[in-house]
Length: 246
Image 1 (tube, rainbow, N blue to C red):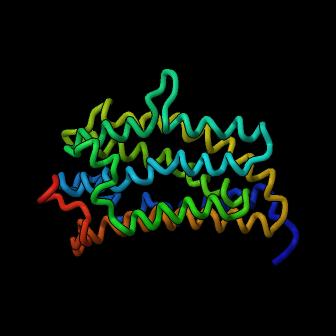
Image 2 (cartoon, rainbow, N blue to C red; image 1 turned 45 degrees about the horizontal axis):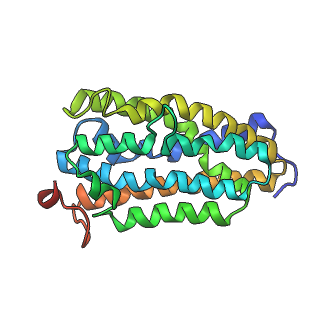
């Protein structure tokens, strides 16, 4: 590998290309969801399992904060925890997701306890936490760069859910609406942080690998959902079963 770093105008398109080719907006499960092709139980399964990821985001960011020795970096990053846990004047992303869960007919307590969670989802999300805790700081930070690709999927999801599902309205989709504002702000800081610190080809490649890893774990969650609830529709033992739990 060359020691000469790619210039910014070449490195940034390499990051974006990962999203164009691998982001979970391309997954068949999301296409079914956004196109109104999932039944009530399948939507419930998605909301229930995705909550495990949502609930772990502030834990991921707390782990990152514990590794940041620069106070300025910590100050900038800690707002992400409040975005999900909430704070003054902000109910937080976790609460907004629970509103969605109740709207699709799930019991809030069961969602909070992660009852019926797919093992594949648990393993994928836990791998993300382990990655952030153990890999280099630049890799851990770079794993959040999938936020570059998030606004487009949120816009598509809002439009698709409003068009096809009775539970969808301004209140129940507030999580996605809020992320349309939060995600671009977060990723602008993250991107500049990564571009500044990835000053060798090796570090740049580590950034690309971290973004690829993150797209893989997002994809793996949907693979688990698709296998359990779409084709061949074989939920594993202990997993949520719509006909019994929905």
